[in-house]
Length: 275
Image (cartoon, rainbow, N blue to C red; front, side, top):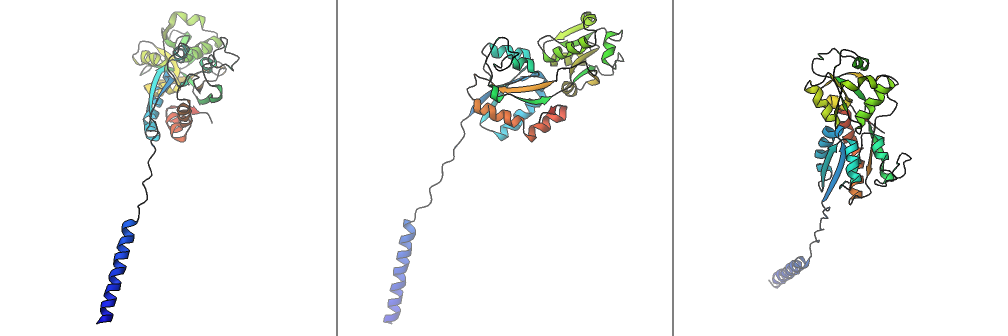
């Protein structure tokens, strides 16, 4: 009986000791989660990128939820002027090298010696094509750039002189030797979207736009620029601006624009991604 009692007491003591040890154990402290600081990033992008950048804007909300993208779409010439005048901009994407060169202190084309982009961040991201588009049904029976200087065309829509697609159009028709003869037929748009609208609404017989804008607007591209008529590559450069308060975030978005996810978006509408 005494042995049984002794065993019960011993077991009871072990139980008390075990309980005591359990009560003093400290659970591991929860590690605090570090939340990224919210960033508002302003991107100036050529009007011809409206559909693609808008789609990418939605994708980036998942990739970088802390970043809010504010996109300003317009002609590259207008965007360049706004940057020169001190507009808030973190990243500039131009539809031509000319406008980017004007802001790049390292460019020999920068006659005003402006230092408004960070040259080390400058990169070519896309290429495009220049095409002749017609309204639905092609009522004028227009099939080539050569048709513009015939009776088939009484009115053609082009981008104006500070719009890259307008500069490309002038180069094409100048090299074809018909630029001066076309002056009475031309109506100008302040950006490429105005040109596509004029063609879509049948306000003109045809227009000159990028292949990607023809696709996005549902217009028929009847011809690409004739061989040898366009010597300037249609390249889209991008760079972080010197005045950016969020240069690191702007560079991160620029890197994202060169990802496989964005390449798929760009290629779907006809851009060629620069590798």
